[in-house]
Length: 334
View 1: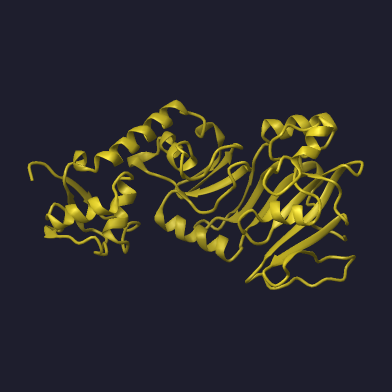
View 2: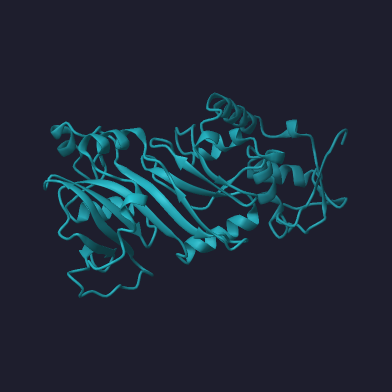
């Protein structure tokens, strides 16, 4: 090899497979390219030929060929990624709610996907390049928000933080509160909704004080609290998802007969449009998240300002959404 690139394995990168490390380090590399480089002996660990499945150990030296040897199609993808990052420079940095050496939280805008997909070239994963973190660091997603949902999105800065935060989400050792505008009025001021394959739909669990929280191993559970109303036509609610199933809040609200304003997939967005009150956008916002920092142990609470379309409509109606004025909507008697 006429030129090489040397990397030393840190404790954060230890115990992962070589091929996964290479894909993370050089986002455009595809598996077939990695296998080809290893087969030709162009990738070495401590001077020995490496295999894609080799497990890395702290302190090892990885020798790679020049970066320009990467797959041309992948390079084109990376160029586009850098272009998008430059075009949107500052947009994510300005949306930072919190950053430390382990984690960061941003206020995701509506209409922006968290990950790429078919025809999806602009997304959080790619725009993370613009944050200018050291050594080409790429924050890692530990949970998801729908493309049209705005609000608090938590990301990990290291593999160790990613594992710790994923554990918090898996064991539900955190608290999330969403704000939503509903078409119609829920049956009670505060309640809980459960759905699972066994129920065959959503079930309203709380009636007065006679209810029992079910096992959520196979299902989805959401608590809601009414914050304000516009007659019986529209309702402002706080939502606390205990579980994190795909489209959970949108499905639960629609199943309750009060779909979220602007929900074209599960709701009756045309109802709001005929009223001329709301813009035809999803009115669902991840308002806050509370966690215990996985390393310092300190209690953290991230609060995301409302997106413009929700702030404007709520202000016009007169709905107050400042949590400092309301306190906790889920405490006290129902």
